[in-house]
Length: 86
Image (cartoon, rainbow, N blue to C red):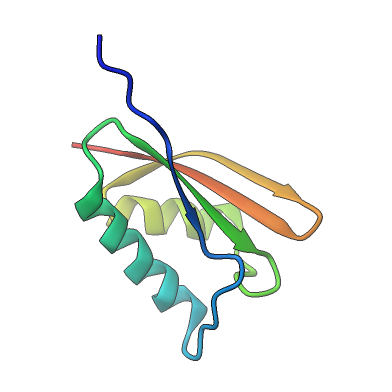
């Protein structure tokens, strides 16, 4: 049995000069190339920089070949847990 380790992508302290939506879309596309199908990634974000609802994260996940597994918010921090699809 192979155990896949969850990758953590910390984007909390990034300086995003452009549109946060497009920045996140680009980040997820890059992650899609790094992960194997079935592997999970936890993307850490700040709510103030990425003020999106669950629907936006689900849509971004789908277009980047991920499934949104969980979305956790705590004290202004967001953890988006995604699973790479086929």
